[in-house]
Image (cartoon, rainbow, N blue to C red):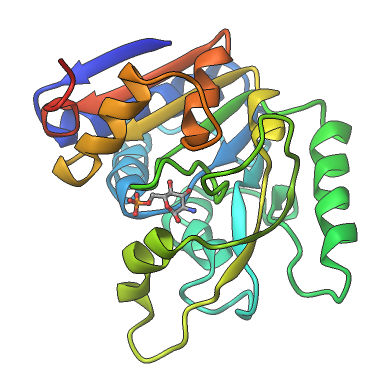
Length: 241
Ligand code: GLP
């Protein structure tokens, strides 16, 4: 695990935005795995800015969402599909026939999960996987207890995830399940970068850096990956001894 630390969150986000930009510039048909969440807002916003200064072509990128809530329409503003359309695909003119999300709108969700795995494999695997981290150590929506060999599947959300994410659902009932890429699916990416910023992530980042690898902290499995970079700011790093 390589750790890159910045004094401020905006510099950490800027670093990740540049990594995504450089990856696509050097390989326009990159297979890109994308995370959602508040941490990513600043990254994607910065990526759009960087691209305005020096435009590159995003239309050949194959983009794979890490996860999707079960029970929302795909155009629901809270769906991860809508999030990525709004923050990434639309402002950067991705080719929407090359953007993928687990299909949660079918009866057989296990079959749908298998198809998502196959889709990633058929494209030759993910080149760069972008990740955030939940306060409970989840990546994607692989909640505590997830096994290292887990693959894309239906996951029940943990109470901490519900607590963290429910604010964005205001008047609507928050979904309690999702389809997420598995830990093994994520670990097969050629390169993984996880960004964590702010004091709310300090405890989980301390555990990620200092504790042993365990399914109690699914993100810790990333430490087995040969090309894993953790980007953090001072606030998220403040409990590391
Ligand atoms: C969400 C997403 C994750 C994200 C994490 C952290 O539930 N499924 O991919 O990394 O939780 O979110 P945030 O950046 O809002 O703290």
